[in-house]
Image (cartoon, rainbow, N blue to C red; front, side, top):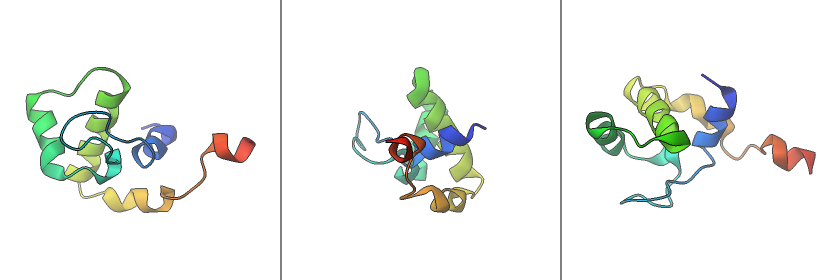
Length: 78
């Protein structure tokens, strides 16, 4: 698991669908389970949805709390 991916979960919004505009970390578990059953999209968004599904399914969502509202490296370097 890449630490940058965890940060992306709390900063990247869902780009399409019923939950467009919702942070990946805030997507409901049943929506993530639907993707797990039907297939994740390709590319970064699919990889992040899969990661969030694993985190949610295993009850580890609290691990993301310290990352919320934390400046990204890009923000700090500017």
